[in-house]
Amino acid sequence: MVNLEIPTDHPRRVSLEIREAIIAGHTDQIVATAGLLAHGRGEAFDYLIGERTTEIAEKAIKVAVASILLAKHPVISVNGNVCSLVAKELVELSKITNAPLEINLFYYRKEREDAILRALKSAGAEKVLGTHDRPSTTIPELSSNRRKVDPDGIGAADAVVVPLEDGDRTEALKAVGKTVITIDLNPMSRTAVYADVTVVENIVRAMPLMVRYAAEMKNKSVHELQKIVESYSNDENLSTSIHLISTRLEELSRDVRVLRKKTKPGENKS
Ligand code: ATP
Ligand code: MG
Picture: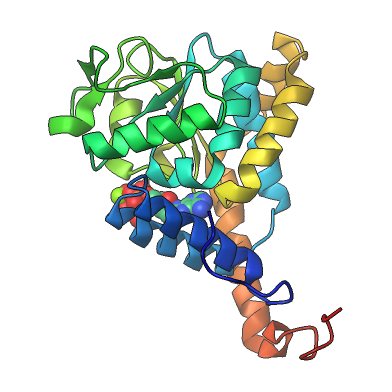
């Protein structure tokens, strides 16, 4: 639900629409207040990568999908930001890959969990793990509510997709031997550097591609999928992503005029 009227020719329309979706999620109790700040950090890094899917991000997406398809028990962790931005795609990816969705919140509130559950159900989810009326187990090395996970979900998973996740959680999941796949626009965040596969991309652009690749790659043999994963280095992926940012900044520092609107006022009006 978007409240703000954004003109179709507004140069930052897409970014504003995404922002409106997060604000609507906050109003609906899906997004935590700190989630608004996390979104702002993401926007800043999206500016730096040029708000587009880079070649290296697309490669990481294929590796992420291959890792999910290879896992015996993959699980997709859902928080408020992710739910408010890509609920439909989460459900699609979950169905194609047989990876259940688990609600797992950094800032736990029952109202938030209920609101996320409702949103996932209305996006087509049948079963959602990690809700308060299910039993929970704990991940060692994390304090309080943040250690609670579903024993049939993240608790038993060999691979966990944790988009827009906090670094402590990622480290804790790694410490108990899970394969961690993330989507994170900041290639320097702790999550980005501790994960096994980091897709440095806006989740709004990444998820539809993941769904598409999952549908395409689903019938590949285990051997073919293993080849995709084995040829990949996440450190190289992060280095390249950081290098892309630094080269882009270098180029812009020589000529900022390219940042000005490509169309003159009125040119886009029909
Ligand atoms: P860390 O704890 O990993 O060091 P952090 O404390 O800065 O990172 P968190 O709030 O814990 O950040 O995690 C949110 C992460 O999600 C941030 O790195 C942020 O840049 C990223 N992010 C926010 N919005 C998006 C988005 N739409 N797509 C992809 N990544 C995003
Ligand atoms: Mg953090």
